[in-house]
Image (cartoon, rainbow, N blue to C red; front, top):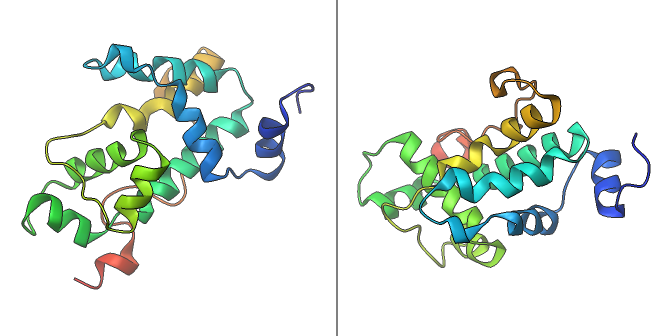
Length: 164
């Protein structure tokens, strides 16, 4: 383990878990002055994660996946699309917007006090961990060795999807 890591980063490395607060604090690295080019918006977050041990990158992805899984809900999807027919990928990318808008917005979506907005997506967030790892190791992102748990794919939260 690397020495002289900030206490929050050291804790993530030791425990292989991250608090929601830490995850959303890391999203503050997103550069909204580059709005309109999602790849440029996420670049500072990629740089931030690439400076830490792999455990931080993997734990960030697991937390992201956990949060996306929690709002993988057919009720949220039906409210968004006004139909039972929709693209699972589009719903995933829409769920990503709940994360980038911050903890309060995410929690309002989770508690179904707010709705996801139609035609808003932020797919680029999904690739941040692999790109951070690739940058750190000077590898191709396709070589990324981690699979997030739980899965963030639409329909993965079977407990919720079984009820429809």
